[in-house]
Image (cartoon, rainbow, N blue to C red; front, side, top):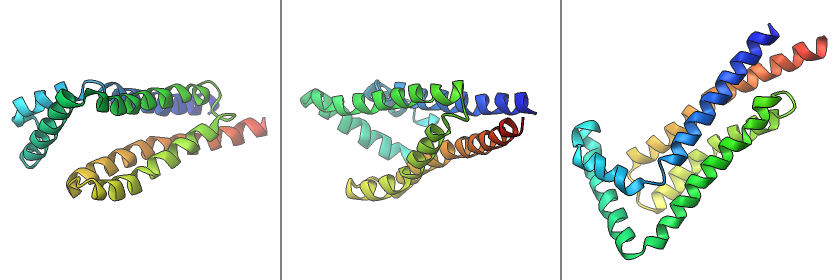
Length: 160
């Protein structure tokens, strides 16, 4: 039972690491990614086309005039990479490092107020704020499953 739990925990953590790495790495080339989607509008739901075009134009104009502002999204990307690095601890010893999983769960929960409050202040459409909230939820699911499995592993380890 312990080895099966360890494999499941490992799967959840690796899944989350890959997801957070992908999220971070894809932040660096944001202008080219937006250009790709505005050039291929059939790849996104039609109701998002206007939003993607508007965001692309804003990023393109900002990068042309004030390229140093993109440094902020570089730091966002870096933070995602550092979060992925932090998850190596629970990958090595999940019971000892369960606090990292709990911290990541809290971070996912805080996506909701950030998206809803800051998104409102920054005039981000509600449907896009909900997309951001869904990313917090999608991150939370494997973390909750991982946390439960670590607690079970902890009980098994304590009884042996």
